[in-house]
Length: 156
Image (cartoon, rainbow, N blue to C red):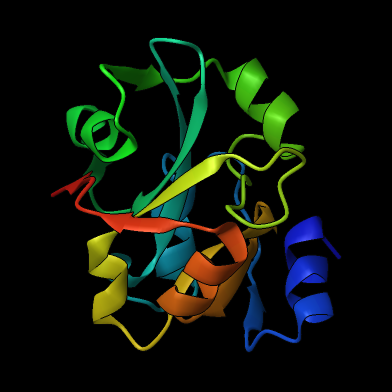
């Protein structure tokens, strides 16, 4: 399996793994997951990495149907500014490939921020650490195992 799934299993966390046939040509991996698993896009979340002005990497978990509000993330993190992280730095810090970055089981413990809309659903879906693999879990379980903070960081 993946480090994300291993982490949840070891912790005895309630979760369910879902897989689908990933199409490398899909324009949006998150929207592809929602479509192939028959889910409303608002329940499927993508994991993005941003960097503060001091180079601190921040993890942002937002709905795949929207986008990340970098100003709101910076405010939530208490930093002056946040920009999208360098893809190579993101892969190195998390241990995952782009398009399959999970907020769970990352190589380095990074500060994590989860959009508040995650709390609207009994469960949500995030990458399980590989393209074509999603994990379903409660927002509270995600927050616990990422030491994440809920914040209004998403944009429709």
